[in-house]
Image (tube, rainbow over all chains, first blue to last red; front, side, top):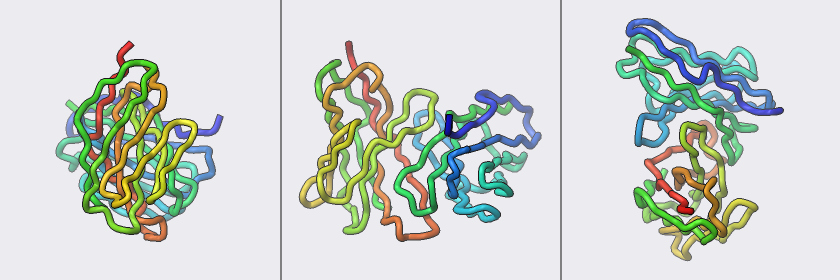
Length: 113
Length: 114
């Protein structure tokens, strides 16, 4: 089935460690996005990529890094510089950077202690 | 992008129509209204979008007022599976290349009651 895969669903890390969240899509979409969601709040954009080998900062990029070496993959690294990394992370994709819809993955819940 | 205002929560009886309001009084002439929903602990799901005409698809109907300052999402026959947080989003036209983000607020928590 076509879709967006995020793994793992739950991730636990110690404070001070970098952690990389996986996002893979087999929809042949050009654009991909990373959002963060905190309890009771809406989504906030971290980074987005309109095409392979290109990405742009979103509203809350500090403490995060991404890469887009392949069309189907857009991993997000949560670095130790991110002050409040515990959150629900959602990856999304859209057919092109000028598409109306964004398709979301199931999310990864990261807990840092 | 224009800011939206939605009620924090709503209840609706199963089988009845659920009407979710959204205010976007500062919307610009070329901004679209989008609706997404998020079932607990899942990724958001696109529902519908429109510019100024009313829109309908297999999931819902979108009614936009003539002055475009508010809109209503209608789920015609709500089921228990429609229990979710519903987000009303306003964004610029797709031609604004380079800024294709969706700005999600806190949404409306819709509970369908058996």
